[in-house]
Image (cartoon, rainbow, N blue to C red; front, side, top):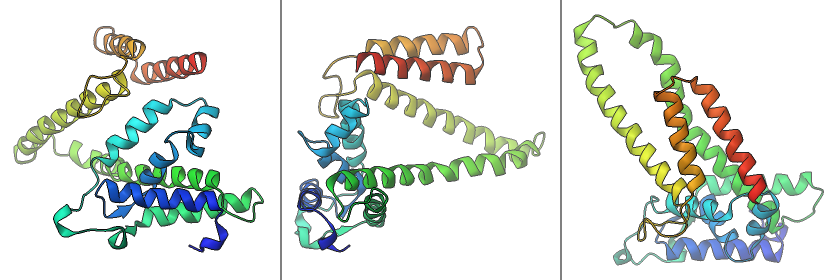
Length: 235
C-alpha cells in the first residue's frame, strides 16, 4: 500500500478502521472492520447503501454480529495498535480499491473506492468460506449413495445426519432472529422494531413447503422477489 495514492478522506477511514479494530480487541484488520466504520454516522458507506436502496440497519447489525466472532486479544497481553496487522483479506480489499479507482479514471483512491473494494473482498471471503461445503456435497454425494445397505457405513452416517439437522436448525433460528429483529444485539436480543413482514413470509414459506409440498425453488424465488419488491417500495 502506497499512502500517497490515497486521498486524505481514504486515509482517515483506514486510521479509523485501525482504531475500531483496537477498540474491539481484534489483532487483525479485516474488510468487515472497514465496512462497519464506513457505515457509521454520515460516512461514505452510509450514503452508498442508501443510494443503492439497501437496509442500513440490517447491514450494520450483520457486520457487527460477524465481528463479535472474530478472535480477540486479551487486554492482559498489552496489545496496542502497533501490534495489529492487516489481514490478507484487508490487503486484497486495498488492491481491489486501487483497481476500482483505476477503472473509474481516478488518479487517487478515494473513500468510495475503498468502501467498494472492502465490500468486494468481504463477499469473496464469504463465497470461499461456503464453497468447500458445496464441493463436499457435489463430490461426496455419489459416494454416500453407493453405501446404502452397508451397515458399517449407514450407522455412522445416521448419527452424522442427526448432528447436521441440529446445526441446520440452529442456523435457521439464528437467521430468523436477525431477520425478525434486524437491529437486535446479543446484549439486547429482542430490542428494536419487529419485522412483521419477514415473519409472515417465513410462516407462509414453511406452510407452502411442509403442508402443501410446494417446489423448493419456486418458494425461494417467490420469497426473494417479494422481499426485494417490499424493500424497493418501502425504501
